[in-house]
Picture 1 (cartoon, rainbow, N blue to C red):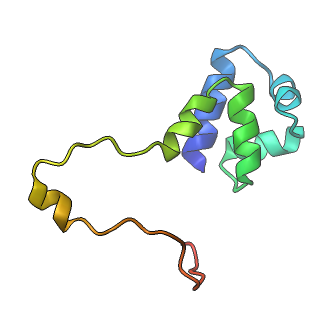
Picture 2 (picture 1 turned 90 degrees about the horizontal axis):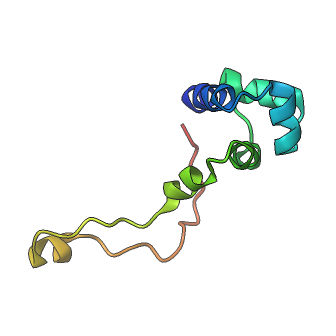
Length: 95
């Protein structure tokens, strides 16, 4: 989160926006924006709102873009595991 916060701050300053103006454009409180820029954990909805306000929402969408790598051979394709159809029932802790 710290890197995201630093990049958000750099982008905000490049657009010559104050924290207050940016928070208002994103629909966030000033304290939430400050928490993001400090690298504190916040919800994804806050990150997305800030990305839209800073006009970098396409960068967020790139997180979930499909892979475009072309397999080198048929053996490579056949050796890859089948894609998952659904999440497992067991909830795993995020580290």
